[in-house]
Length: 191
Image 1 (cartoon, rainbow, N blue to C red):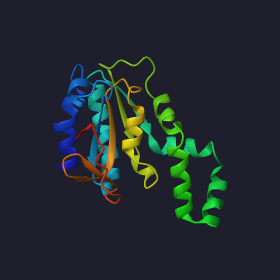
Image 2: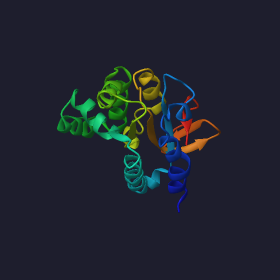
Image 3: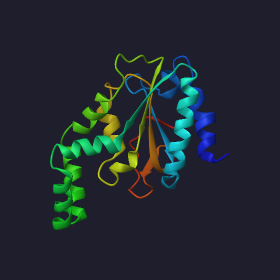
Image 4: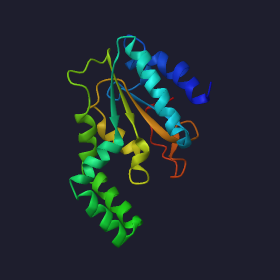
């Protein structure tokens, strides 16, 4: 059993399987979410293991909602330009300029948080619903997850796990994709 599978089955799953996981997933009543950190090169394995975890939780009468940050990013960017316009702009201006532009689009507007919140379950039941936020690496290097989670505070009411591709830096610091400078601003529990 890999470390990833072990942590999913023995650390995260018992918490999510509780009749009301909110107290064990977070110490903050307005932030019922946690991070599950994994090595970026384990992305495909993580997706397989999350599908297995989802099946096991459904057998315990949990309702799972998946939110893809890649889909949210795509939708957010389409509000500004078509995909071909983004491609042309990158070709003309260079990748670094487009990364800065996308960062500005995501940082200066609540659009990304709104897209995530809009995908939350209808008529949410914190004892039954669990949300998995996946494809976090799609936002690399343009946007930090701590900003997303902080802006979503109070808008997420059900246990939510953001699957984070990165490395630990101390007890509460994370480096997205193992590359960006450590962000020590993570208040949610890290599994």
